[in-house]
Image 1 (cartoon, rainbow, N blue to C red):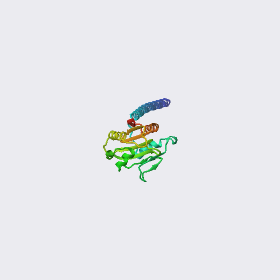
Image 2 (image 1 turned 180 degrees about the vertical axis):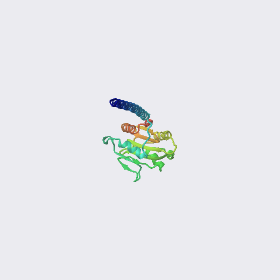
Image 3 (image 1 turned 90 degrees about the vertical axis):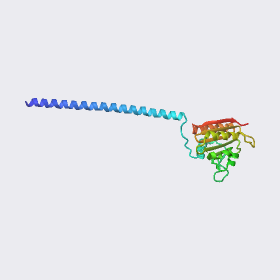
Image 4 (image 1 turned 135 degrees about the horizontal axis):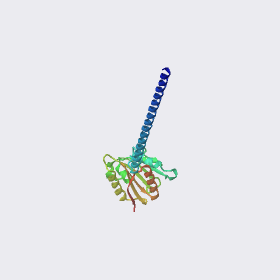
Length: 222
């Protein structure tokens, strides 16, 4: 009878061992399946997020990071290689804002100076609240750039149109620029006039820094 009890005990232990092993295998399989499903879900979600990001980028929906017009213009100028830069000055004539070989802040308080220097219409000065400039040091007709931030609920397109009309009708001294290009980037309006080769390089750099930039006008100046 003892040997029968021993055989029975061994048999029961074997069944328990097999049962536990089967449960562990089942749990492992279930865990692996769950992990695989989760990884697949995460991969799908990641792919969808990347696709959405790429779609947003391709549509030019990124926001302009520049906090001021000067920051905006500095970002473009800093993207120039040293050999691509030209002798330049920036800002208005005040000691505080005037700079050499770099963009400078341009006060929006004096509408007449905005008009005579950058071509911004004096009667539209109340539509902007910040500005910056960069000008060819040897001849402003070689290159002059003004960056203007549209105030409040104003329209960048309206400001760009007023700017275009004012520059095209102005009286030029010491010759005249070859071309006028006006670009809008969010709440910023960028006007450039000068020789075509410098304008082409500037527009290329601008587009690289701000892919959502839209050309409002590109016209020869007669």
